Amino acid sequence: MLQIGITGGIGSGKSIVCRIFSALGIPVYSADDRAKWLLNHDLTLKNAVTELLGSEAYLPNGSYNRAWVASQVFQNPPLLQKLNAIVHPRVSEDTQKWVEHNTNAPYLIKEAAIMAKAGQNNALAQVIVVYAPADLRVARVLQRDPQRSEKEVRDIIARQISDEERHKIADFIIYNDESQLLIPQVWGLHQLFKK
Image: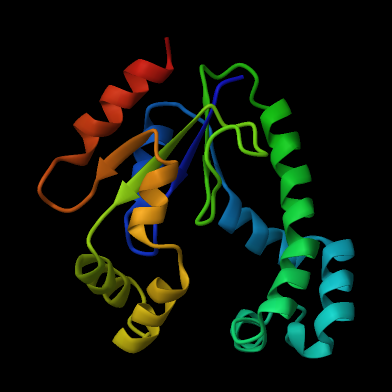
């Protein structure tokens, strides 16, 4: 089964690119969305996170306290590594089940904010990077998430890998910088992958 990865920084447009692939009938697995779902619904994972971070990791209604957890782990890299060591294997298991349920598709798309080069400890055949310049990404995120400040968004961008590093893992780059149309770029890749 041909598996294609899609990545890009916050506000780059990964989600819209994935929606275009989905509209073309291609199954899309969003690792970040599934991780959020699992953190809220998988009892084993919830227990492991609570054991690591304490009861404040979940709100009284049982939902994942994302803002509090982020405030604890982003300034503490060893703690973030421990949290990732709990969450990532569970997401990998979930991904594998998803792949097994989608064997009739011509290819599959896996979307994640953090991704390794194709074939580097993953099942990806190719990696697509969605690119947009930082100022445009900031503007998009502020429009999408008005509760965030510009400083907060720029801090997130600064914590993510650089565009230069992301381009090193890219087999293909989709430019979502408002200078090129998205659909023709996605359509061209779709024609290539479905062969």
